[in-house]
Amino acid sequence: MTENQLKRLFIAVELPENARLRLGCLAQEVSGVKWNPAQQLHLTLRFIGDSSPDDQHKIENALQTVTGSPFEVTLSGLGVFPSTARPKVLWAGIEGGKAELVSLQQEIEYQLLEAGLKPQDKPFHPHVTLGRNRTAAANAIQNWLEHHRDFALEPFSVNSFALFSSKLTPQGAVHTKEVEYHLES
Image 1: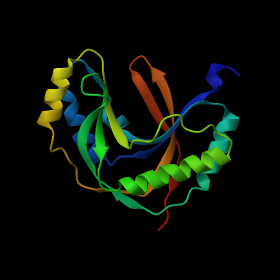
Image 2: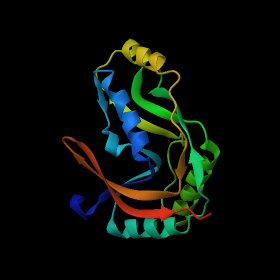
Image 3: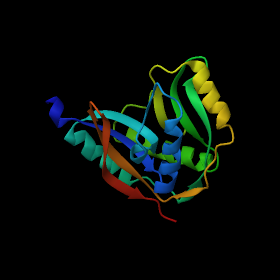
Image 4: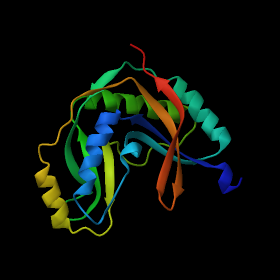
């Protein structure tokens, strides 16, 4: 199988436009960080990686069996991975709806395991990745965190999740929604 036949897949919750725009405004404040474009911001539930068309079909079928009810999520707080001394990834956190989000992610993980996928190799930490530190000093990022210590957005409804493909380009990743799955009340 050639690399062109493989798709880089992940499962995520799309953010409403107003949330993406507000998060995108935070990107102007620290140089040396490669910020994700606002239109690409999402809440990853599961990264899958390179997948064949057959694997994608299995994944799509497994995701059709995921059940859950719509819920509300509140984005609140900013942070970094792995630590403030070595900030590599800048993120927005989840406050309200965290338990429901974790439950949805666990249901997705269970169905993917049943379909034969390998388990996720990292624990799930719900967040929205805003950018990756390239050259910014740790103190510049700490100042940014302090400046936005009260960051919070209004709650939004999570009524669905989607399977996305991601094509890496020199300008950054381009995400394409492959299939959307609706949560039923």
